[in-house]
Amino acid sequence: MSDAKNLIAAGKPRLSLLFVCTGNACRSQIAEGWARVLLLQSKLVDQFDVQVASAGLETHGLNPNAVRVMADIDVDISAHTSDLLSDKLVAQADWVITLCHHADQYCPDIPAEVKRLHWGLVDPAKAEVTEGDVMEPFRQTREEVKQLMEQWITELEVKVSCSAGFTVDDVQVSRETVYKGFMQLQQVQVKHRLFEGGWSETFQRELLVRDQAVMVLLYDPARDAVVLIEQFRIGALEDKHGPWLLEMVAGVVEPGESLEGVAKRESLEEAGCEVQALERVTTVWTSPGGSSEKITLFCGKVDSSDVGGVHGLVEEHENIYVRVVSYEMALQALAAGIIRDATSTIAMQWLQLNRDDLRKRWNG
Picture 1 (cartoon, rainbow, N blue to C red):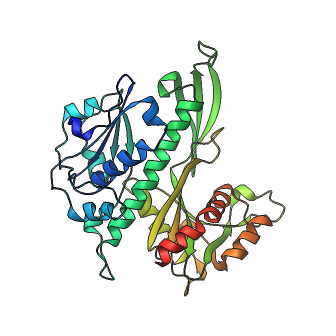
Picture 2 (cartoon, rainbow, N blue to C red; picture 1 turned 135 degrees about the vertical axis):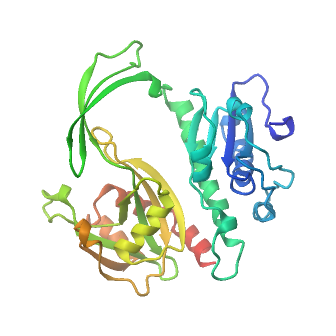
Picture 3 (cartoon, rainbow, N blue to C red; picture 1 turned 45 degrees about the vertical axis):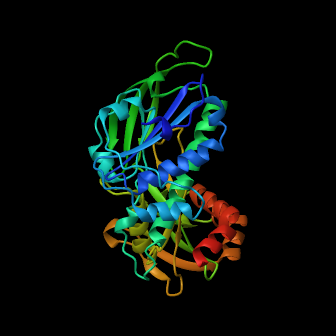
């Protein structure tokens, strides 16, 4: 981690980021470039000695398309080098962020004091290009990394400004599974640190354990249309309008699957839509007072011209009706409470804020 690669702010606590992918050729280089630019624009650089580096499990050399795509937005990474990951680099980092599943799986052991984060990104150098524009996957990766980096910076700024700084080390837990069926219920004994100092008494909570999930807002920028699905939902049995909800495509992340892979699979299974591009929206805890469910929201670019009808997997008891409605009609459905589940509401509100930008980029 050379001095030339670091942003120095003497006399401040260190904040060191290390981006890791397989070959340190493209994804991690783009991430390093974005980190340097975006951190300099953030409040964090006023509070920390910010240091940024990238490395790979192997060294494949700097990908010229990565250099080119960053130069398009006036970020120069041409002087970056393709460096080999070492235990020393890992030990010097405060955060290790892996950018591909191979790196996540085979990354060396990370010390307990080093925070770890995984962004599972598709390798743009290996993406299949159907229309001959080899740079499009690199542009998509560049924008996805920018969004993830901005989200990480925002979250850390908020934590520094608005959080007591508690971590997983400030809670003690013992668990017992008391029911296991379609879902799992755990009885949890817990104690945690208090804001005023000391520890709470041990108390009991019941936790509904659910796998991580993905939700996709399917949007056709050319037609300015939204693809919605209607299906039976057991949790809405008491809904006065009935337990059929108008919502977005969603699915559970199976072992070994990437979030993006689930988004594409579920879009095809539930709505018959092939996703052409994905924009990460956010990740939310749906009901953290009693459930472990965490959902990552995406917006997916689709062609809705031949979409509709009944979809879903019979073996999973899915009976899903697919509807294509105009953007304005979708907003009316949201305002009227016809779209009323939390994650679909969040996704539609995000689309309201980002629709114009999406249409410019996706229709370009």
